[in-house]
Amino acid sequence: MQYIKFVLLFSLCACMPYRSPDRASWASYLNGASFTDMTEFSRTAKQPIFLGAGGKTLEAVIDKSNNLDYGDKAANDNMAATQYMISLEESLYNTLRKPGISVQRAGTEVVVILVRDAIMKLSVAEISETGDDTLKKISKILKDYPATFIEIAGYTDSMRDQNAAYALSLNMAQRVGVYFAEHAINPTRLFIVGRGAARPIAAQDNIGRLTNRRIELRIVPVR
Image 1 (spheres, rainbow, N blue to C red):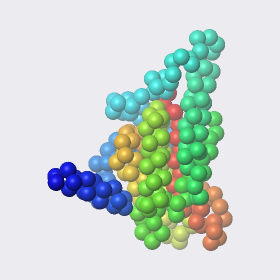
Image 2 (spheres, one colour; image 1 turned 120 degrees about the vertical axis):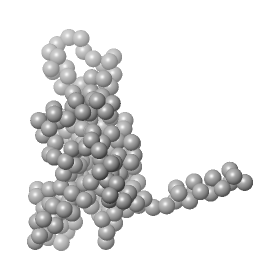
Image 3 (cartoon, rainbow, N blue to C red; image 1 turned 180 degrees about the vertical axis):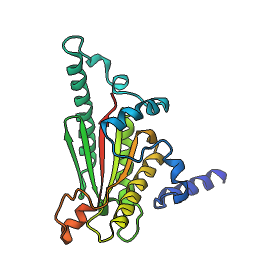
Image 4 (tube, rainbow, N blue to C red; image 1 turned 30 degrees about the vertical axis):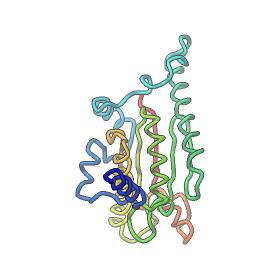
């Protein structure tokens, strides 16, 4: 009887839609995350904190059998970093074939663009059922590539109140950061920013606005 109760309870929990934790608890989930742009300087400053929290560099996780024992070390390191990020890009691309989501790579940086409506409810700032599925898949892949820093940047469409746009974009980014932390992503890997209506990627018409409301995940290797 006790076993049956447990199974029923587990099944009920598994069917319940995801809800973000209470906002008052977000700081504890994001303890160790940086609330700044992920620049080269900020990554360098963050690395000792990341390593102290159990993080690993690219050298610690790549297959040593593929290391080259000849040639220029810097060139070999860049090649290893590029191959690592190509593998990450392919995993994300093959998993996230959904409307409103794109995966791009430039050198050793991978960017995932998540249109807001693809991961959040239409009427409230909450992750949708589809978004839960998408972010769960992304979390699993990010765990398989631990030698990376991740910038989570929130964007809105053009709004008359720029302060409101900034607050909304930061709320979106923090909400995704909390989700990742809940799903075993080390928060010291995270850089979380809200950029309001900056950097539009589409026209500010009715269709373009839906694209400009988005989360961008920028992922880089930790060397």
